[in-house]
Length: 319
Image (tube, rainbow, N blue to C red):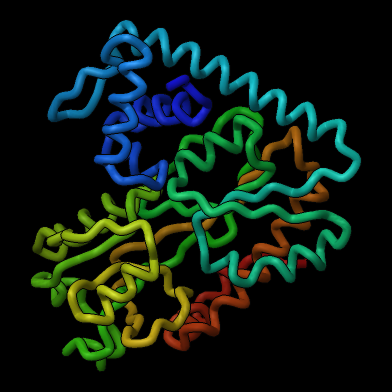
């Protein structure tokens, strides 16, 4: 076996995340699969790269050496990619996103704003990794969310504009759940439920949910962390779990979306772009496309539409 770029990226993710579990979530793989890959990398490297403990992982001297080389090699690859794009006659616009709701409505608006530009959209699993890749030149612009008071670190050379300053989290539960008939649900009434969530998005969501549940008087029983949204929805439809979701999430047969009384968990949606790749005019065009895509997603939930219409101060400008 020879070390490849994907191996260097995995080692870097483990170091940045501070644990195998969080790194696996960012990479979109299982923790056992990442552990097995790390063992193979360590065999090639000739020794342990990380010391593992209950609090996470810490790089060994050999690990520090490999990490230094990994950052240098991956940085050179990013520079190569940026250089080839700079000389290409019609480079595609590379967008990264973890907000599937927006992507469903986005292509048409981007084509209207940028009719002669090829669009390349990639779905990632972690807001933190997405922002880092933007700063490294792997994306031109990204869309991501931050929940509660969490702030994703923004690298130099990146500009950010908030699309939605306050978006409430709704709860998705089975249509046959006893609370499904209520127009809104008290978070405390979900104290006995089993919860599911996506693998760590790096957006502060798990921490915000745990804090809100603590304020409501209970500790959530989180049993399922799932990367596949459709699998998560099947669990909910089968009344095996409930989950926090964006209010603009699509209709899913067998489930309902309900607001939480008092909006105990809120977040914001942001657009960021690499100034070296996106001029201000193009950034404005991308923002308009994303804003219109978000507005298109609102009618998917009549309850959220009523919430939205009562708060015009939050509406993004699209002109």
